[in-house]
Amino acid sequence: MKRFPKHFTWGSATASYQIEGAARADGKGESIWDRFSRMPGRVANGDTGDVACDHYHRYEEDIQLMKELNLASYRFSVSWPRIFPEGTGAVNQKGLDFYKRVIDTLMTNGITPAITLYHWDLPQAMQDRGGWMNRDMAEYYLEYANRMFTEFGDVVPSWITLNEPWVVSYLGYGSGEHAPGYTDMYAHFQAAHHLLLAHGKAVASFRELNRNPDSRIGITLNMNSTYPAKEGEAYERAARLWDGFLNRWFCDPVFKAAYPQDMIDAYERYQPVSFIKEGDLQQIAQPIDFLGLNYYSTAHMEPAESGEAGLTGANAFLGVRGVSTGRVVTDMGWEIQPEGLYDLLTRIKRDYGDVPLYITENGAAYPDHVDADGQVNDDERVDYLHQHLAACHQAIEDGVDLRGYYVWSLLDNFEWAFGYDKRFGIVHVDYETQKRTPKKSAYWFRDVIRNNGL
Ligand code: IFM
Image 1 (cartoon, rainbow, N blue to C red):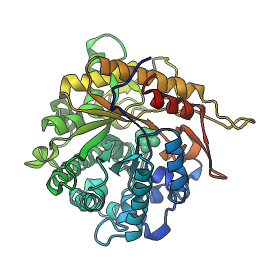
Image 2 (image 1 turned 135 degrees about the vertical axis):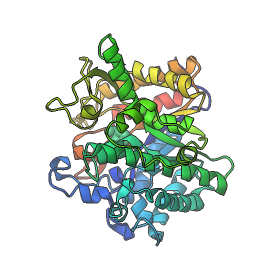
Image 3 (image 1 turned 180 degrees about the vertical axis):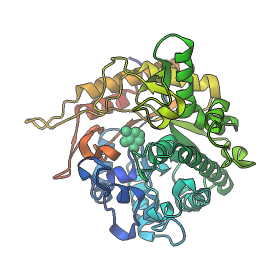
Image 4 (image 1 turned 180 degrees about the horizontal axis):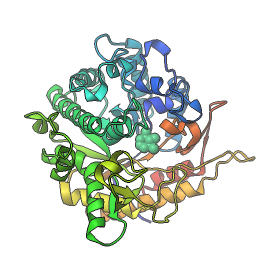
């Protein structure tokens, strides 16, 4: 038996827009995903989060499920436009009441809440002011974060400022696959900087407010291990550039108060980084209590010609391309490489020090269905989770301070541009009836938690 440390935290994660539905209920404002999902061709099948898993009305049933699965902690995000329908100014009390009910029900059932403040559903009113390209967004975010700290900071012990700022800035502003759908590499870097600034301001304010001396705050980054596709200097360089773009651009300012020079150089080949103002990096690099990692896959990189036909976005910008290695893929087309998780965990320790780590997301999409006998036999997901937990275990054995693991996701849900086509849940959701059916992986995970080991 591979046992985990005594106080290891076991949980599952979700995000507001992906599960709540109730898109206009009780005074909620429009979010950029409400707007974007209505634009023709942006989301598969024209799906929207209008109803999603209807968690807004079914949170009690969902929390009972969490309890049955032995979850010790639940990571969820708050919908900013439910709290501030216009992004700033007037507060929507009914929005606050909803999260109060969720938090109370979790606590009554012995499940510790972990709040992510921003998991991509920016109020549309904020986008109308330029969204994350606008430096003022850091101040608006701070207003929202402060309100949440004031309301819930005494009872919620764990806070995450941002979920995957790279996805927000690159997929939202660089490649255009996500809301708001811009395709401008400079906008990406600018948005990323303002997100980091927002993070730093919120951390400083959290310390100052000090609502509960035992509570902790961190950030969640989506990080991949990046490898050269072949031996050779050009391949090493390609891997390093992608690492700079995806990983170091976020970790370096947070932990070292500096942006990676190779990325600054890449950017400045085209334009000065005038959006970085004096004092910003000190503001960003507030000490955090933990780093959350969302890990799914790896990247194997090779050099490419920047002007090459078909090369777009960051690939054209950096002159690199990811290649397939022939490994087995999930339904997202993402290669399965659990040793990449081990490499990532040990690399963080090596490059950024002994910061406490949490896997705030890990999981896999498969085209699951309920059998005639009412079961969902998702053996591939069990296998995926098993292998990745084994990698976590190995990293802990080798001295990494990994404190917890949250499976993505509790429920099948709205997978952004893929709509409801991709199922990541350990619990199956029938979107016609809203019936929840725990999959084999849910029962497997319940037993892992019971045994505190594999
Ligand atoms: O569904 C997403 C989640 O919102 C953020 N991390 C990756 C997941 C799977 O794509």
